[in-house]
Length: 275
Image 1 (cartoon, helix red, strand yellow):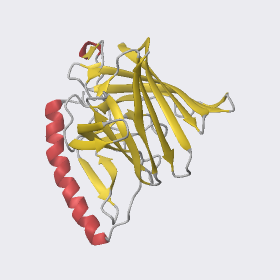
Image 2: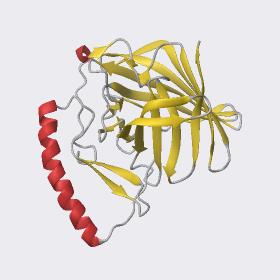
Image 3: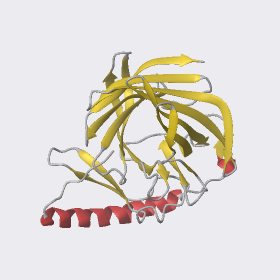
């Protein structure tokens, strides 16, 4: 999810002055809202020569000043954000191809299991991924929703699999452990320009998201969807890769994910079912 383009010195000067001005304006807003939001302050983008927006710059000292307040009293027991409705028993199935013409399949299942993290009741979501029919990942993701409808991500227990055996748990993290901090995956009322950390563990989990649009029409094989939220996903840990995701109220989750820099390929929703 990520990548950078070197700009001319003159352009950099303009960008720097712009970012300083934006930082002053946005920091005032951040003070008013407090630090309960995963949004970290001023946001700016860099761009390729072809005009593709590729990087999110959050003015939080590379995460050192990112300190979301997690108050268990501010969280609710269900996740019913219309763009990320994690109801136990719900399953979303996705298929697609990557740049190597590898057939991918992903199944996301909201389990009935719960876990407590930082005093918050967490919904456990299982995500499994296959490549050319072989299971390559089996992960438990941990989510919760606050009273404003924001869906937070509290970590994951990630397992990479080869020939039926777990070969790595790299990428696993839990909010409150070893400096890891919860992030946000969907705002209660997403607006164009919203940017936020989706997770934070320095050097391990630094995904970021930004809302690009809120009224997209998307056609995939399963159906046509209106008024979708389009986000950009990016991390400094993989700076050459950028992904766009499209969320639909009708599906209650992502319907389409595609790479727009650092590779090619996409994966789309093919089925919604209940267990």
